[in-house]
Amino acid sequence: MRVKILPVLLVAVVLLAAAGCGASSQVAARSQDDRIDIAYTGWPEDAVIVGVTGALLEDLGYEVRVHRVGQREAIDGVASGRYDVFGDVWVPVHEELLDRADERRENPLDGKLGELDLLNSWVVGVTRSSLAVPSYVGINRVDEIEGSGVKRALVLAPDASALDPPPEEVLSRWGLEVEEYGSAAAMLEEVGRLYSRREPFVFLAWAPHWMNREYEITYLEDPGYALGSLTLPAEIRIITRRDMEEQQPLAHALIDTIVLTQSQVEDVQLAIREAGGPEEGARRWLAANQDLRSTWLRNAGTQAATS
Image 1: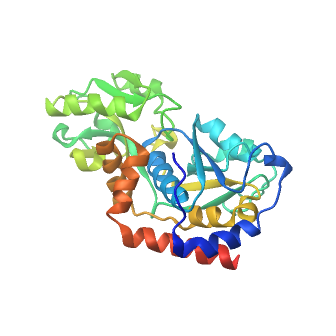
Image 2: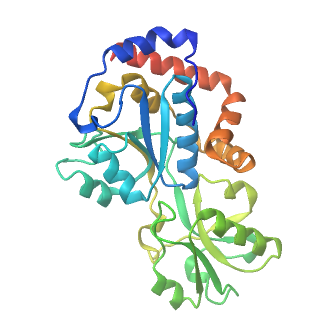
Image 3: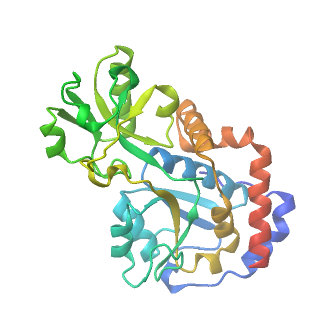
């Protein structure tokens, strides 16, 4: 990512924010005043928040560095100060990882943690997830898989998404052959191939995601809780390193002010898919949504100036 020239209307706010930045031994190895290090897993929803925040931070004059890591390293890295931000924490799915990264906090939903800050959800509402089938399969519950003609289960490797994988022993009990993919893109490529041929199959599905627009699918109900935590709704939240709000108030305020509807998340994902990458896709989407972009920047400047 490249450093952009600071927009004129925000110069005063940025100078005010920069004047309040101080040194920190925790991050002394880097120039924390104008550089933001973002942990990035490559998950579809993470691409959205990384693309949008990265583009806007660059527009405010920050140098943005994106680090591709696994979910555990992303959370631990923010807690240790190695990274400034990670935007794809699913609460309560990632509660155990938050516990490990920050054992001193009393309540994971309080927001202020010992080693990192847990911000509000940047996606309106909660997620939806389960095993799903194309609607032409004609079933509605997981206990209907047997006898439906479905033999293949397409799932993701444990570190390939924010979701816990469905229990393999349960899938085997339903007579399913499990096919594990290392990325959502790889799994959905096969989903698209099977869907176009109207073959019966079951796969890991969640919302928000562009798959819900591309295909007519049915999320399978799980009244017996056979899939464990897979079907639990979650908030998608951002974590920032301790003291970021004090040292980089404008960047922190911007990150904290971004909120997208689930439909907007899917819009950005489609733009990223078309553009071939988070930065270009997010910039195209922001260019088509200038009012929202201006509101975020204005709110971030106001929040930083009054904090």
